[in-house]
Image 1 (cartoon, rainbow, N blue to C red):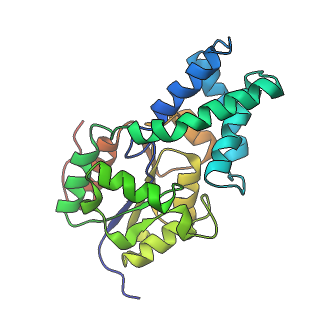
Image 2: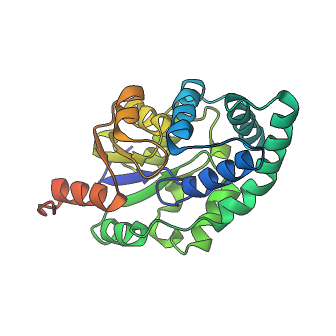
Image 3: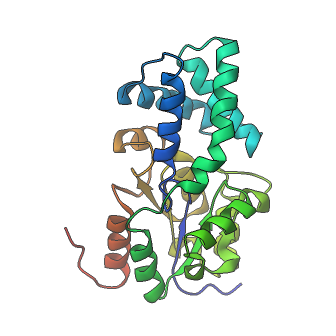
Length: 245
């Protein structure tokens, strides 16, 4: 295998697509319908507790993983088993529509354009299905930025994140040595996968986590509050471009 060039690989949801905020609103709405008051602080606390369970995701993937997540959220907010069942099914039934309506982050296209035009190979490693991945990229008109061989979904691996299998596959398919690759994500499982693959890892607080939580659960190379700032940092390190403030 001949390695050549630099590569930047991304998680999808919460990194390129602003889907986490939509899921946040879905959860809050359905809890409030069941007379559960939800503050930003309480939701972040539950999210932090759930990270202990999802640091290594359950074996169930796809819809099973979604049901499991909503069930645990309902129970942690004190819903009875019966009410938690109703909460789970109501959230899960709307999750696909929420997912498909989520927009790109405002800086996604600008960031992908800068990297693509600078000659970086671009790829994605996501826990979404291959169908969801392709549909999302086409819908948002960004599929042209990516090396098709570098698009890796949960359907392409035996071991999901935080195992680095999918990221290593994307790197190999794009002929990028791990030491020349960057992996950008908004969750600890992204960072752990990237660290285990040997890439430079960038944590984004664009999902549901702040810098403190990132540092508690994983050790990214660096953390940024926006994709734009992350790409600026990559460009400054590799293209002799000063990092803007």
